[in-house]
Structures are given as C-alpha cells and as structure tokens.
Length: 366
Image (cartoon, rainbow, N blue to C red; front, side, top):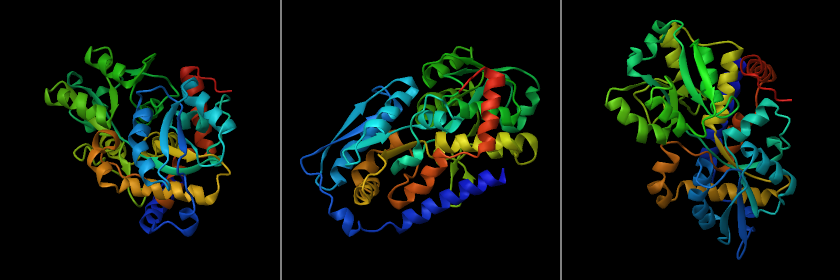
C-alpha cells in the first residue's frame, strides 16, 4: 500500500508544482503555426458519450489557443470498448501535430491489465491534458443503513450491482466493494451507468454509483426524497497526493474515510493497492489527451500551452460546470506526472487483479 500511495503522492505533487510554474510559451513553441490546417481529435468511442462530449467541449478552445487557430474536428473511431480506435491511432497517426488522441479510463484499464488485444503503449504517447472526474456510491434507504459506518450491520446480506462489465470503469466500484468486504453480486450486461441507475430505481439493483454530473442530476433527487442514501465518493487527490473529499460533494466521506468508518482502521494490502491504481486511472486522471510518439518537442509544448490557456479562458470557465465539474484540469508541464498515475500500475497489483477477475468472474485477458 505504501509504495502505491507514495507513487500517487509523488506524481500528483509534481503535477501541481509543475503546473504552478508553467509560464509563457518558450520560443520553440512560438515557432509552431497551424494556420489553415485541420486537427483531427480521435475519440475511440461513439458520438454522444462522455469522452465525445468532453472533446467537443474543449475543441473550440483548443482551436482558439493553438498557434494559427486551426480547425479542430472530432473523429469518432468506436469499437472493441475503445481498443480498436486507440490501436489504429498508435499504428497510423503521424507526429505532425495534426492528430490528437483522447481516451478514458475504460481505455487505460485494458492496458493496465495486460489485455492481449491492446496494441498501444501509453509510454509512447505525449500527454497534453488530463481531466479528472468523480463518482458517488449509494444504496436504497430500505437497506436500513444511514451511512458507511453502519455497513457492517449488513453482515452477509447480498447486494446487487448492475454492471457494464468486469473490466469496464465498473472495475473501480468492484474493487471498492471487495476492499470494504461487502457481499456484492455483479450482474453484467448494462450498456451504461444510466441503465444501472434505472435498475436501482426499479429495485433490481441494491447498490450503485454514478459519475458526478449524473449523481447531481439524477440521484440527488432520490436522496432528497428519502429513497437513496449516499455512502461515499471516490474522492480526489490533492497537491500532496492525499485523498480528499470531492469538491462536488464536500458533505460525503471519500472512500478511505468510509473504510475507516466501517472498520475502525485504514485500508491496506494488495487489494487496496489495486483499487488505488484503478481509481487513479478511472477517476483522478480519467481522460488524457495525447499526441503520437516522436511528435517534435515544440509541437508538444504548443499543445500544452494551448490547453493551459484554454483552462484559464473565462468563456470555458463560465461553461465548464456540466462537462468538467469542479475539478482542476492538469495542464501545462504538470500533465506528465498525473498522466503517469493514470497509465502505470505496480506489477503485483496487476497480477492480483488479473487473478481476482479470472477466479471470480471468469475473465481471461490472454
């Protein structure tokens, strides 16, 4: 556990320090000029999904702040749970600054797990932006649990979770439930978290999580009506890499607080290390934007400067709430260490997760 937490703390602290030192673009970046050109931002998901909305939100600001104000268009390349488009980008994208890739935790997870379908290596890409997000786990009020401190009263009571798949972003709550020691049966086949929420509302699922925006829009009314009870948020990482309460839900304890409320001590062990790794990739550093390997340094710097300027753009700030929430974007030179949080894992933790998935959910990754 300590090795994983040290890695997370070191990476996040470095990200915040580097971001605070980001100044005017160096001379090399000033020489870049994309006038009259078009940037293709590859998104390996269908239109209308979270990553597509995220990229389309940023695209006009990227165009505004890149040298020469190029046209920025979104190219959706779905398939294989986002593996297909990412494989294609890794194989075909040219390092000329005109092709950009945006992925999500569901793209990082197969890479971290060593999925044999993956033909991309995150170490080969050049990160220029990382966007975090959050999520909240909740149960029905009928369970008779007021908060996380009372979860132990459930004993061996089986809870049901409507899941998109064992290697999707739902791996994060799966590992959270395992670390907490809850008895949860995962029912697979959901096409999105919206389906999971509807299953919860119908009484078919008895534990669920929603990302920040969906929780605020669709679950807070259930809480206010007295039919749902929030247990914990996944939390966010601060400048020192410590887990803190999610700024969107400051009244809800984060995962480690919930564990301590339930068990009276801090979590530890390889299962917790695995959870923290996938939490980092799935939430704390969920959506990275990257250029191909071998992209010249001046082009990489131009993109980092452009996203840093975009993050400070008053127009973006005024309209960011529904898409970006209250989460600070990793931009400038600070993007590199947080990117490492999202794309690296301790080998022992990886092996533990692979064994867990194989033995408990018949997931074969080779």
